[in-house]
Length: 176
Image 1: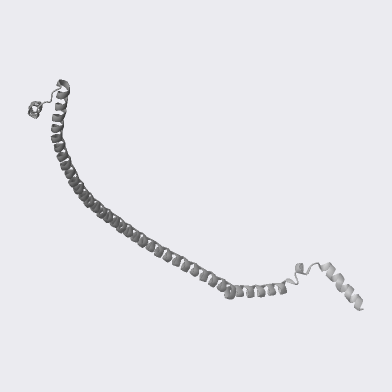
Image 2: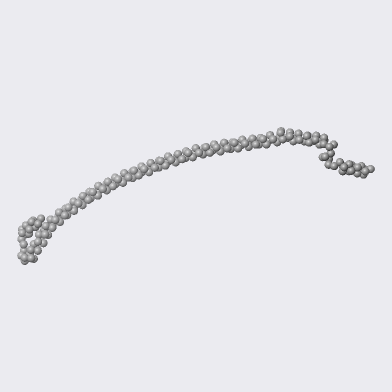
């Protein structure tokens, strides 16, 4: 008999089709579906969405904080950059002033040395000109004596007689 009951149950299932399409089964399935849906909705609204929302809000706050910090650091870097550029400009101005002062001092020292050298050279030139003038005067005095001796020698050679010193002096005086 058990075999007959099993065979009848199998035949009954074969004729009724899939249990999902059996309308007699739907009310129980609907209750379970509503119950499970309510639990899923309750879990989402009470647990998952607040956690995800909190995580998203925390992440947005972190991003906003990081962006704010980055802006603050950028502003601070720009301020430091401007300060460094200003210090560089001041250092450059000081260096240019020192260079100009050193150049002026070197130029003044060179001018003073040049003036001393010019004065020393002018004095040496004056002394040399004095010596040259004295040597010229002495040479000119000696030229007169040499000319008298040469004239006397020429006269003796040409005439065969020695010329007197007074005659030679008169002849040379007439030339000068």
